[in-house]
Image 1 (tube, helix red, strand yellow):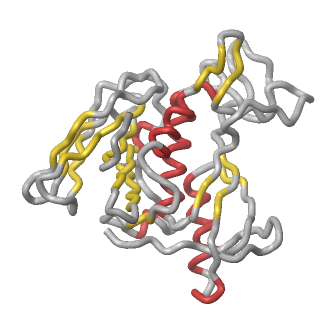
Image 2 (cartoon, rainbow, N blue to C red):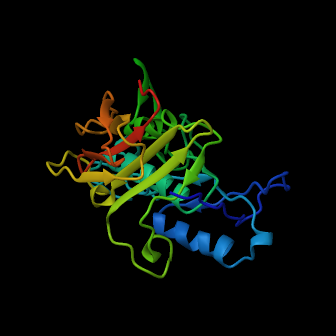
Image 3 (cartoon, helix red, strand yellow):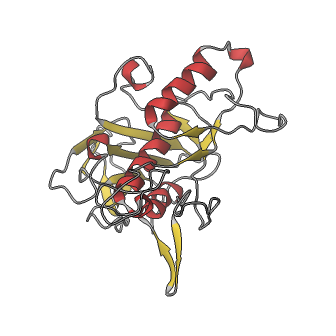
Length: 271
């Protein structure tokens, strides 16, 4: 694995800061990230590059669905469920976050963690939150648990490192990337490690699949015990209790993850 270099700003949002610029872009799909990377990295000389951040992202559904009033903000899954409540939305947002790390962005901010509305003209416009207020307390959507999988196995300041293989169809917006396994690796200053991944063939699954793709990840410390946490293993949108995986004498970890799920393999104690 090798260090992933950061990218530069696309849109200036506020005044420059010491290490780059704050800026905002609204991105809704992974291929768009490759376009942005080309504009801010490949099309600029190294001395003009600055840190780049994705400040808002969410998942779009349908404007019309059974049993629901038509809207203009792509708020529904195909069966009429609000997109923010679905496993599909959670899966794709975690995939998007993995892609930002792979492509060298310095960070990505989900829109939104908390409950909030910005447009009351046609409810439920702009309703993308991950925590929902109810009379019984705060309801946590699958996207909350998916993001927590990442945030509970990494820490601020960790370095993203490249996971091989890394082919042209992984970064070039002009080359089609077929559905496949995607993994981002995060390395802490004290040799902590987290590998977060999923199989994008499961990107449209809102229910459980019987298929369990196998993973074989090399380049790890030989004969070492790591913690494997799986989000949505049972199709319920939650993260299961972590299990232990021991690498081989050659430093290879082998395990299986349901097609509809995502995983974090880490040195961190996951609770």
